[in-house]
Length: 82
Image (tube, rainbow, N blue to C red; front, side, top):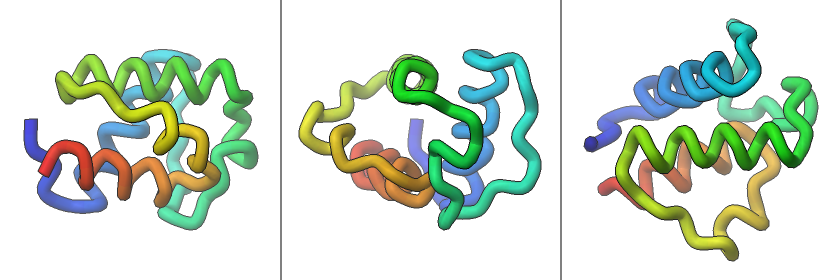
């Protein structure tokens, strides 16, 4: 699956959060910090797992270690699936 835009990647992120945490996140931007969204490290990794499954990719551990914001995750998704 190709992700053609940041907005498309944001929607994938929102869907993954809903799947993991069963709560919608409406007001997120690329600058939103993952911790500010109420995602602890375990929930964040579960969201990453959902994204990996949906995109049929495996993110590198060293790339995941640097995730702080939604934008970081969106950039990783776009970099990995292009």
